[in-house]
Length: 98
Image 1 (cartoon, rainbow, N blue to C red):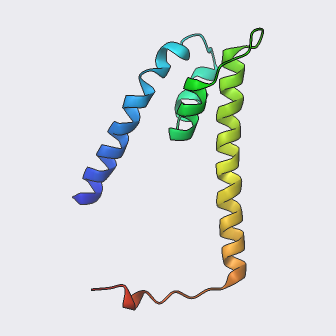
Image 2 (cartoon, rainbow, N blue to C red):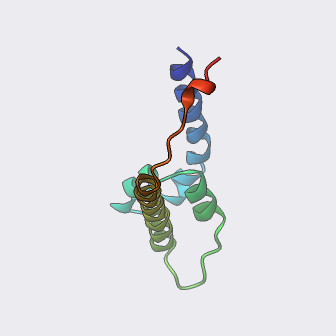
């Protein structure tokens, strides 16, 4: 039951920072779904508060920021898993139980 409650609270929190982005993503065309599904805390801050220089497309900048944020996350997860398998560290969890 606790896991369900935590999942709902975290998902509900995400909807609060997704609402301001609906107006910004309105004219994104096919990229709208990519921008919505790629919305994380970090991506929201970058896409919402970055000042776009004159002559640049806000949709293109938001798309690149979302793709790069996602790509860095995937690369970091891969490197952590790969390097973690090389280290061969054993953690004794029996001391953590109460």
